[in-house]
Figure 1 (spheres, helix red, strand yellow):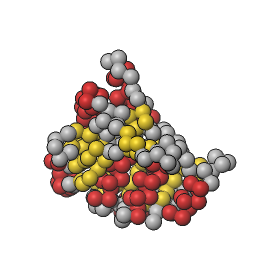
Figure 2: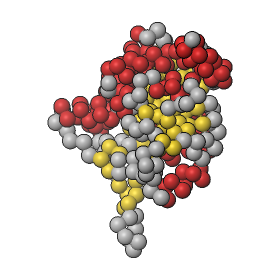
Figure 3: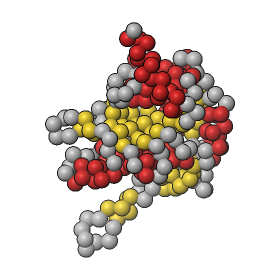
Figure 4: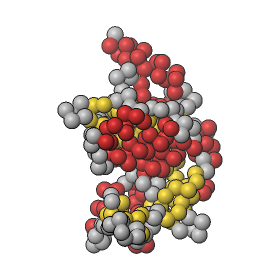
Length: 289
């Protein structure tokens, strides 16, 4: 009876998401723990099997850092972003577009799915430009432009290739690498790419997997059901700060731009994707317009 009740609980959610797109940013511990990696792949295959169209956008920062260290190259970060010279960009392409992307594709295929790996270069999927970071040492000094090298920001997304794969029972797995007008390759934040992808695809939901349960208050209690006003207040009171700010901004930007809802969930929880999408309780911080 317990098994039957779980299946019945999932039924209205399966009906609601059938035929709709869910964009999932895959990162954190869920990408490094062998058990969690297989469970994530199973979740994605199950969603596709019941008629949902999952689109996976993945990161790979720890894997990039490990390979750079093995090559004797020190990683440098400014405001949380990796400084990416040409040599580092070659490593980023190798890790994101090759090692990490193909591992995810293989795991999904082994679980019974039909995954296709992409980078933003394929089909001109992600057009980008150099990200200009400015810093002001004092109010009397002009802003300083910081060169992060091949770090980019999204200018446009052409979803044609993703929509084609979705309509033909394939599961797109996207590495956050973009290309500029002059053919330059750019390393782009995976959360940002996932958010922009969700907007362009008119996704029903955006999921951001992290290494935290979601947004927590001062007592460690999980906060959910947040909107723009709530988030503004939580920022002002420093409940939301540090590395959570860009994720929250990405999630909020998506829902303001038409995505049904966004959710920041704990990728360390087994089957977190299914728990968030197909159960009454959910598994993280829900953000809506």
